[in-house]
Length: 307
Ligand SMILES: [Zn+2]
Image (cartoon, rainbow, N blue to C red; front, side, top):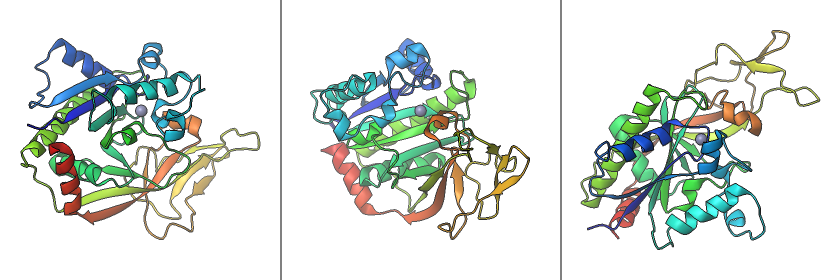
């Protein structure tokens, strides 16, 4: 029998309350979600932020898991202490080690449900292939972004984020709750199949690879002077190209996409994400790529699960 343990995290951002609601439902009714015999640990990522209804208290917990911060001795930030605490309790070298971490978030952007991975770890690519093959979710490959690092799931040998939207911060929504619940069930079922090597891996994985993020146009004082153009509003995952309208400024003038590094169509995501306003991100651009499934991903995943 596999000793695999799966860490399920909700409320990493304290103002994303739908996944914590699912955990509360589950605590009330243990039959709500089939564990398929897996050892599963549901945990609230940032309980104090959740209690306060804030994304975080001192800093973004989901940017606090990089080694420099985890090894720092003299930080007073609550989230750095919490990141260390989670790694101490459930990290791969802890007494209660989890090998897989799944971090459930919600987004205010009109992205529907999606999966996010950070970099190209083979086991991550394997598990998102299984889930994409099962329910067709897009996979956002966040890599090559020097401005954003230290994501929670990176501290575990395998892990990914589930993003469900659109839903405002601090707002419960039955559809978001149901989508979160459905995705959680599928994740556990697909992991459980891997224990006895019953997974059906696809031949292809479709990824949306991160290219860059852009900010809103601002005046010299830093105030935004344009908003998302109506043609782009709620058009996450839809391709645009140089010349496509992206912003409309205070005078009503259209600002168009113009980036010499984009040779082909790009696919915007996290358009107008409320949580990214403080990060000066108006949207992220991705490139859609179809990859052949590589058996080394499967081997890495099976080895992790069955070691
Ligand atoms: Zn979040």
